Amino acid sequence: MAAAPHFISRMPAFASIRASVLAPLVQQIDKKTGKADLLLAGHGILRSQLEDPYAVVPMGRYVALFEEAALLIGEPTFGARMGTAFKPADIGPIGMLFSLSPTIRHAFERMSKYVNSVQGATSSGLFEEDGDLVWNYRVVDPAMWPRRQDSEYSLAASCQLVRSCFANGWRPLEVHFEHQPPRDPLPLERIFRAPVLFGQSGNRIVISKADADKIYRQEDRSLTTILERHIADLVGETDFDPTVAQKVRALIGIYLGHRPITVVTIAKELGLSPRTLQRRLADEGISLRSLMREHRLSLAALHLANDVKKARIADALGYADSTVLWRAHRSWNRRQGK
Image (cartoon, rainbow, N blue to C red; front, side, top):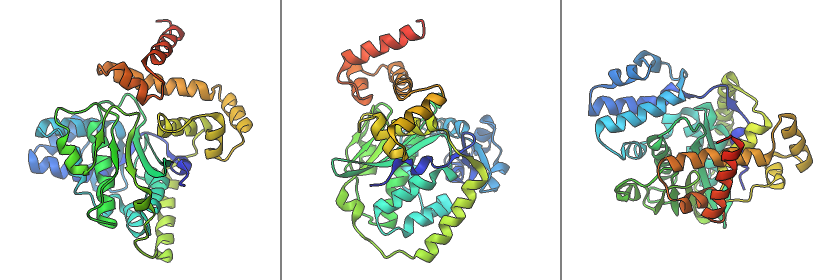
Protein backbone atom coordinates (compact mmCIF):
# COMPACT_ATOMS: atom_id res chain seq x y z
CA MET A 1 0.00 0.00 0.00
CA ALA A 2 1.30 3.45 -0.87
CA ALA A 3 1.94 5.67 2.11
CA ALA A 4 0.00 8.88 1.78
CA PRO A 5 2.80 10.91 3.45
CA HIS A 6 4.83 10.61 0.21
CA PHE A 7 3.29 13.81 -1.01
CA ILE A 8 3.88 15.71 2.23
CA SER A 9 7.55 14.82 2.52
CA ARG A 10 8.11 18.17 0.83
CA MET A 11 5.83 21.20 0.52
CA PRO A 12 6.31 24.50 -1.36
CA ALA A 13 6.96 27.58 0.75
CA PHE A 14 3.90 29.34 -0.62
CA ALA A 15 0.76 28.48 -2.58
CA SER A 16 2.05 28.47 -6.14
CA ILE A 17 1.87 26.56 -9.39
CA ARG A 18 4.43 26.11 -12.14
CA ALA A 19 3.88 28.48 -15.05
CA SER A 20 4.14 25.54 -17.47
CA VAL A 21 0.87 24.16 -16.10
CA LEU A 22 -0.94 27.28 -17.37
CA ALA A 23 0.23 26.86 -20.96
CA PRO A 24 -2.56 24.48 -22.12
CA LEU A 25 -5.16 26.67 -20.40
CA VAL A 26 -3.90 29.83 -22.10
CA GLN A 27 -3.83 28.06 -25.47
CA GLN A 28 -7.46 27.02 -25.07
CA ILE A 29 -8.56 30.52 -24.06
CA ASP A 30 -6.76 31.95 -27.09
CA LYS A 31 -8.37 29.38 -29.37
CA LYS A 32 -11.91 29.91 -28.04
CA THR A 33 -11.96 33.67 -27.40
CA GLY A 34 -8.69 35.33 -28.41
CA LYS A 35 -8.79 37.13 -25.05
CA ALA A 36 -6.13 35.26 -23.11
CA ASP A 37 -3.91 38.31 -22.53
CA LEU A 38 -6.84 40.33 -21.19
CA LEU A 39 -7.94 37.50 -18.90
CA LEU A 40 -4.39 36.94 -17.66
CA ALA A 41 -3.93 40.62 -16.92
CA GLY A 42 -7.21 40.66 -15.00
CA HIS A 43 -5.67 38.13 -12.62
CA GLY A 44 -2.32 39.87 -12.35
CA ILE A 45 -0.46 37.54 -14.71
CA LEU A 46 1.53 38.54 -17.80
CA ARG A 47 2.08 36.17 -20.72
CA SER A 48 5.81 36.85 -20.46
CA GLN A 49 5.76 35.15 -17.05
CA LEU A 50 4.75 31.90 -18.73
CA GLU A 51 7.79 31.77 -20.99
CA ASP A 52 9.93 30.30 -18.21
CA PRO A 53 8.60 26.76 -17.52
CA TYR A 54 10.12 26.85 -14.03
CA ALA A 55 8.58 30.18 -13.07
CA VAL A 56 5.68 30.11 -10.60
CA VAL A 57 2.42 32.03 -10.21
CA PRO A 58 0.12 32.19 -7.16
CA MET A 59 -2.19 29.19 -6.97
CA GLY A 60 -5.20 31.35 -6.10
CA ARG A 61 -4.85 33.36 -9.31
CA TYR A 62 -4.66 30.16 -11.35
CA VAL A 63 -7.82 28.71 -9.77
CA ALA A 64 -9.77 31.95 -10.25
CA LEU A 65 -8.52 32.29 -13.84
CA PHE A 66 -9.72 28.76 -14.63
CA GLU A 67 -13.21 29.48 -13.27
CA GLU A 68 -13.54 32.74 -15.19
CA ALA A 69 -12.30 31.12 -18.40
CA ALA A 70 -15.06 28.49 -18.22
CA LEU A 71 -17.66 31.24 -17.78
CA LEU A 72 -16.20 33.31 -20.61
CA ILE A 73 -16.16 30.34 -22.98
CA GLY A 74 -19.59 29.20 -21.81
CA GLU A 75 -18.53 25.59 -21.25
CA PRO A 76 -19.29 24.16 -17.77
CA THR A 77 -17.09 21.10 -18.36
CA PHE A 78 -14.22 23.16 -19.76
CA GLY A 79 -11.70 21.84 -17.21
CA ALA A 80 -12.67 18.20 -17.61
CA ARG A 81 -12.53 18.46 -21.40
CA MET A 82 -9.08 20.02 -21.20
CA GLY A 83 -7.99 17.12 -19.02
CA THR A 84 -8.78 14.64 -21.79
CA ALA A 85 -5.97 16.14 -23.89
CA PHE A 86 -3.40 15.95 -21.09
CA LYS A 87 0.00 14.46 -21.95
CA PRO A 88 2.84 13.20 -19.73
CA ALA A 89 5.06 16.00 -21.05
CA ASP A 90 2.62 18.59 -19.66
CA ILE A 91 4.07 17.99 -16.18
CA GLY A 92 7.62 17.48 -17.36
CA PRO A 93 9.79 14.83 -15.69
CA ILE A 94 6.96 13.79 -13.34
CA GLY A 95 4.85 12.85 -16.35
CA MET A 96 7.75 10.97 -17.88
CA LEU A 97 8.26 9.07 -14.64
CA PHE A 98 4.53 8.25 -14.58
CA SER A 99 4.70 6.88 -18.13
CA LEU A 100 7.70 4.65 -17.35
CA SER A 101 6.12 3.03 -14.29
CA PRO A 102 5.44 -0.72 -14.50
CA THR A 103 1.97 -0.49 -12.90
CA ILE A 104 -0.76 2.10 -12.36
CA ARG A 105 -0.12 1.82 -8.62
CA HIS A 106 3.57 2.67 -9.05
CA ALA A 107 2.65 5.60 -11.30
CA PHE A 108 0.32 7.17 -8.73
CA GLU A 109 2.75 6.50 -5.89
CA ARG A 110 5.30 8.58 -7.79
CA MET A 111 2.71 11.24 -8.54
CA SER A 112 1.95 11.45 -4.82
CA LYS A 113 5.61 11.76 -3.96
CA TYR A 114 6.55 14.46 -6.45
CA VAL A 115 3.41 16.40 -7.37
CA ASN A 116 4.36 19.37 -5.20
CA SER A 117 7.33 20.14 -7.41
CA VAL A 118 4.63 21.35 -9.82
CA GLN A 119 2.17 23.04 -7.46
CA GLY A 120 1.48 23.86 -3.84
CA ALA A 121 -1.60 24.39 -1.69
CA THR A 122 -2.87 20.95 -2.69
CA SER A 123 -3.38 17.67 -0.89
CA SER A 124 -2.95 14.42 -2.79
CA GLY A 125 -2.19 10.84 -1.94
CA LEU A 126 -3.13 7.19 -2.15
CA PHE A 127 -4.93 4.82 0.14
CA GLU A 128 -6.68 1.47 -0.12
CA GLU A 129 -10.37 0.96 0.60
CA ASP A 130 -12.08 -2.42 0.41
CA GLY A 131 -9.15 -3.71 -1.62
CA ASP A 132 -9.31 -0.95 -4.24
CA LEU A 133 -6.86 1.91 -4.75
CA VAL A 134 -8.05 5.49 -4.21
CA TRP A 135 -6.23 8.55 -5.59
CA ASN A 136 -7.18 11.72 -3.73
CA TYR A 137 -6.71 15.35 -4.79
CA ARG A 138 -7.97 18.68 -3.45
CA VAL A 139 -6.94 22.30 -3.00
CA VAL A 140 -6.48 22.75 0.74
CA ASP A 141 -7.17 26.50 1.05
CA PRO A 142 -10.94 27.05 1.60
CA ALA A 143 -10.57 30.61 0.31
CA MET A 144 -9.87 29.23 -3.16
CA TRP A 145 -13.52 28.61 -3.99
CA PRO A 146 -15.17 27.89 -6.35
CA ARG A 147 -12.60 25.52 -7.79
CA ARG A 148 -14.66 23.12 -9.86
CA GLN A 149 -12.59 23.60 -13.02
CA ASP A 150 -9.28 22.79 -11.34
CA SER A 151 -10.76 19.72 -9.62
CA GLU A 152 -12.35 18.31 -12.78
CA TYR A 153 -9.29 19.11 -14.86
CA SER A 154 -6.93 17.43 -12.39
CA LEU A 155 -8.95 14.21 -12.19
CA ALA A 156 -9.66 14.08 -15.93
CA ALA A 157 -5.95 14.66 -16.59
CA SER A 158 -5.05 11.85 -14.16
CA CYS A 159 -7.42 9.48 -15.96
CA GLN A 160 -5.99 10.52 -19.30
CA LEU A 161 -2.46 9.80 -18.05
CA VAL A 162 -3.55 6.27 -17.20
CA ARG A 163 -5.20 5.82 -20.59
CA SER A 164 -2.27 7.17 -22.58
CA CYS A 165 0.44 5.39 -20.57
CA PHE A 166 -1.24 2.07 -19.74
CA ALA A 167 -4.56 1.22 -21.45
CA ASN A 168 -6.63 3.42 -23.73
CA GLY A 169 -9.87 1.69 -22.75
CA TRP A 170 -9.27 1.96 -18.99
CA ARG A 171 -12.04 3.27 -16.77
CA PRO A 172 -12.14 3.92 -13.01
CA LEU A 173 -14.69 2.30 -10.71
CA GLU A 174 -15.94 5.70 -9.48
CA VAL A 175 -15.01 9.38 -9.52
CA HIS A 176 -15.77 11.67 -6.55
CA PHE A 177 -15.95 15.48 -6.43
CA GLU A 178 -16.24 17.83 -3.47
CA HIS A 179 -18.41 20.34 -5.35
CA GLN A 180 -22.12 19.98 -5.90
CA PRO A 181 -23.58 18.29 -9.02
CA PRO A 182 -23.94 20.40 -12.16
CA ARG A 183 -27.28 20.68 -13.92
CA ASP A 184 -26.26 17.93 -16.30
CA PRO A 185 -23.70 15.42 -14.97
CA LEU A 186 -23.84 13.20 -18.06
CA PRO A 187 -20.97 14.94 -19.92
CA LEU A 188 -18.69 14.22 -16.96
CA GLU A 189 -19.79 10.59 -16.82
CA ARG A 190 -18.95 10.28 -20.50
CA ILE A 191 -15.52 11.82 -19.98
CA PHE A 192 -14.66 9.61 -17.00
CA ARG A 193 -16.54 6.54 -18.33
CA ALA A 194 -17.64 5.85 -14.76
CA PRO A 195 -20.23 6.84 -12.13
CA VAL A 196 -19.53 10.35 -10.77
CA LEU A 197 -20.45 11.26 -7.19
CA PHE A 198 -20.67 14.84 -5.92
CA GLY A 199 -20.61 16.60 -2.53
CA GLN A 200 -17.82 14.35 -1.26
CA SER A 201 -15.08 15.22 1.25
CA GLY A 202 -12.49 15.31 -1.52
CA ASN A 203 -11.87 14.68 -5.21
CA ARG A 204 -11.03 11.02 -5.80
CA ILE A 205 -10.51 8.37 -8.45
CA VAL A 206 -11.32 4.81 -7.34
CA ILE A 207 -9.24 2.18 -9.16
CA SER A 208 -9.75 -1.57 -8.97
CA LYS A 209 -6.91 -3.52 -7.39
CA ALA A 210 -6.63 -5.72 -10.48
CA ASP A 211 -6.08 -2.66 -12.69
CA ALA A 212 -3.75 -1.00 -10.19
CA ASP A 213 -1.39 -3.97 -9.90
CA LYS A 214 -1.37 -5.28 -13.47
CA ILE A 215 2.18 -5.17 -14.85
CA TYR A 216 2.36 -3.34 -18.18
CA ARG A 217 6.12 -3.05 -18.71
CA GLN A 218 9.56 -3.68 -17.31
CA GLU A 219 11.00 -0.54 -15.81
CA ASP A 220 14.18 1.10 -17.05
CA ARG A 221 15.73 1.76 -13.64
CA SER A 222 18.68 3.76 -14.96
CA LEU A 223 16.35 6.23 -16.67
CA THR A 224 13.88 6.50 -13.79
CA THR A 225 16.75 7.10 -11.35
CA ILE A 226 17.93 10.06 -13.46
CA LEU A 227 14.40 11.49 -13.56
CA GLU A 228 13.91 11.06 -9.82
CA ARG A 229 17.20 12.85 -9.14
CA HIS A 230 16.18 15.71 -11.43
CA ILE A 231 12.78 16.07 -9.76
CA ALA A 232 14.38 15.97 -6.31
CA ASP A 233 16.68 18.81 -7.35
CA LEU A 234 13.68 20.86 -8.51
CA VAL A 235 11.81 20.22 -5.27
CA GLY A 236 14.85 21.14 -3.19
CA GLU A 237 15.06 24.56 -4.85
CA THR A 238 11.64 25.78 -3.73
CA ASP A 239 10.40 23.92 -0.68
CA PHE A 240 10.70 23.57 3.06
CA ASP A 241 10.00 20.83 5.57
CA PRO A 242 6.39 20.94 6.80
CA THR A 243 5.46 20.83 10.45
CA VAL A 244 3.83 17.78 11.98
CA ALA A 245 0.54 19.68 12.14
CA GLN A 246 0.72 20.39 8.39
CA LYS A 247 1.33 16.71 7.69
CA VAL A 248 -1.60 15.69 9.89
CA ARG A 249 -3.89 18.25 8.21
CA ALA A 250 -2.97 16.78 4.84
CA LEU A 251 -3.74 13.22 5.97
CA ILE A 252 -7.08 14.30 7.40
CA GLY A 253 -7.97 15.78 4.01
CA ILE A 254 -7.10 12.49 2.32
CA TYR A 255 -8.82 10.08 4.68
CA LEU A 256 -11.87 11.94 6.04
CA GLY A 257 -15.04 9.97 5.35
CA HIS A 258 -13.10 6.96 4.05
CA ARG A 259 -10.74 5.73 6.77
CA PRO A 260 -10.68 5.96 10.58
CA ILE A 261 -8.69 8.98 11.73
CA THR A 262 -7.12 8.21 15.11
CA VAL A 263 -3.85 8.99 16.80
CA VAL A 264 -2.75 5.40 16.19
CA THR A 265 -3.52 5.38 12.44
CA ILE A 266 -2.07 8.85 11.76
CA ALA A 267 1.05 8.10 13.80
CA LYS A 268 1.61 4.90 11.81
CA GLU A 269 1.39 6.79 8.50
CA LEU A 270 3.95 9.32 9.71
CA GLY A 271 6.32 6.66 11.08
CA LEU A 272 5.91 7.90 14.66
CA SER A 273 4.67 6.35 17.89
CA PRO A 274 1.24 7.62 19.04
CA ARG A 275 2.84 9.21 22.09
CA THR A 276 5.46 11.01 19.98
CA LEU A 277 2.79 12.32 17.63
CA GLN A 278 0.73 13.67 20.52
CA ARG A 279 3.79 15.31 22.05
CA ARG A 280 4.84 16.97 18.81
CA LEU A 281 1.35 18.28 18.16
CA ALA A 282 1.22 19.57 21.75
CA ASP A 283 4.53 21.37 21.14
CA GLU A 284 2.75 23.20 18.30
CA GLY A 285 -0.16 24.02 20.61
CA ILE A 286 -2.63 21.76 18.84
CA SER A 287 -4.16 18.27 18.94
CA LEU A 288 -5.55 15.73 16.48
CA ARG A 289 -9.05 16.45 17.76
CA SER A 290 -8.70 20.20 17.19
CA LEU A 291 -7.27 19.62 13.69
CA MET A 292 -10.21 17.35 12.87
CA ARG A 293 -12.64 19.97 14.14
CA GLU A 294 -10.91 22.69 12.12
CA HIS A 295 -11.05 20.63 8.91
CA ARG A 296 -14.68 19.63 9.35
CA LEU A 297 -15.70 23.19 10.14
CA SER A 298 -14.03 24.44 6.98
CA LEU A 299 -15.73 21.82 4.80
CA ALA A 300 -19.10 22.26 6.49
CA ALA A 301 -18.97 26.03 5.93
CA LEU A 302 -18.34 25.50 2.20
CA HIS A 303 -21.20 23.05 1.82
CA LEU A 304 -23.68 25.00 3.95
CA ALA A 305 -22.96 28.12 1.93
CA ASN A 306 -24.07 26.19 -1.15
CA ASP A 307 -27.35 24.99 0.44
CA VAL A 308 -26.29 21.34 0.54
CA LYS A 309 -28.57 19.01 2.51
CA LYS A 310 -27.25 18.34 6.01
CA ALA A 311 -27.52 14.58 5.58
CA ARG A 312 -25.15 14.75 2.60
CA ILE A 313 -22.74 17.01 4.48
CA ALA A 314 -22.75 14.64 7.46
CA ASP A 315 -21.84 11.72 5.22
CA ALA A 316 -19.01 13.64 3.52
CA LEU A 317 -17.57 14.70 6.88
CA GLY A 318 -17.71 11.22 8.38
CA TYR A 319 -20.56 11.81 10.85
CA ALA A 320 -23.13 9.14 11.64
CA ASP A 321 -26.06 11.38 10.69
CA SER A 322 -27.20 15.00 10.38
CA THR A 323 -28.09 15.17 14.09
CA VAL A 324 -24.47 14.55 15.05
CA LEU A 325 -23.41 17.18 12.50
CA TRP A 326 -25.91 19.69 13.95
CA ARG A 327 -24.56 19.15 17.47
CA ALA A 328 -20.99 19.55 16.26
CA HIS A 329 -21.88 22.71 14.34
CA ARG A 330 -23.60 24.18 17.39
CA SER A 331 -20.49 23.40 19.45
CA TRP A 332 -18.27 25.13 16.87
CA ASN A 333 -20.46 28.22 16.99
CA ARG A 334 -20.30 28.34 20.78
CA ARG A 335 -16.50 28.11 20.68
CA GLN A 336 -16.42 31.05 18.25
CA GLY A 337 -18.89 33.08 20.31
CA LYS A 338 -21.66 33.03 17.69
